Image (cartoon, rainbow, N blue to C red; front, side, top):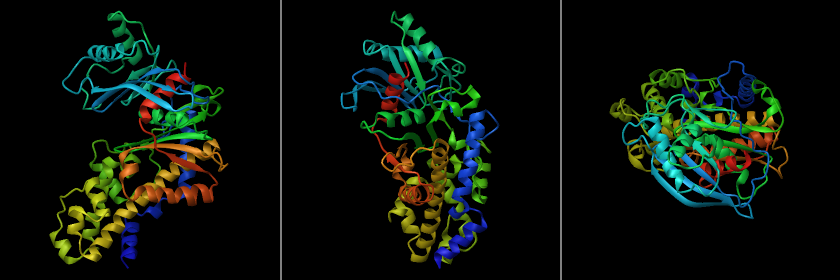
Length: 426
């Protein structure tokens, strides 16, 4: 009874998970990928990274790795031992320059040069995971487009990262380094190449945390906008920007109220920054339409916004929502609404993977699956998401399409992936 009325409500508002038809959406996502690869208008940017991933990671060669993202800057030396296992040494973490007051871009580069000096003898190569908007150039340097609000470096736009750090190193009397700049999704994917010496048919990087993004290795012949070529190249989909999934009333409500309406539409349907508000708006609609008891409807606070911690606690039977929705009928309705939202997110994620596997043709041999290196709090900590995704990996990707894949969780994925980038892109 509860399921039927919840399903009817969600369908009235085009919010039901069943409103994401897997095969049709996979075909549409695939067409958007191919348009992006060709340089045609597409909500999937398909950004070339100029990083390859088609050869084994060299053993016992150390590189410097750096990771700049959010509030922290991390640096270490990484090598792969004779068994192919990553070894992280000399790890240090510092406050990200620019988070404790406004600085100039030259001061930013000088601070990074200062961090590097301690590791100067490790290697001439630096793998730098730079998780801010950046244009990657064919020489694998990166042009800064902007910093987030947490980092205050107003004159950084247009500056080249490796070039700027090398200028700061020269001013300190130190030798230049060869920088390989990449973002966190690409680093996460490349980590799979060096993960436990496992041979995968292909590798996908996927992040589902506060935001979401995807990366995979593409044959260069399939990237017309850079003129094709031989070998493979990592391609950054910017999958959170995809606009092709069917959206419902509460998706549109949330988008209209966001800071950037019309932007990152898929991210607003599945990522941790938005799922709490999306579920909140859906529940408000259910309250207005009488899905809950009269007692709860009378007491419900329409201004209240749930966060992901509260929603996860409710699913696990604890916290303030479990207390407020304690009546069995009310609890069942809220659980069904939350479950369907995560089911829809899992279907969207499965479509993303299915389109990539269809494009590459990899993963048909069960003995050689595609490794999906996944990172992010929503992926691993949202209680209902992962079981739903595993169901679609089994029934849709494996059962219906014949693709075999394996979820990989690796420690220090961005550091290890940055090392892989530096070691195999010399």
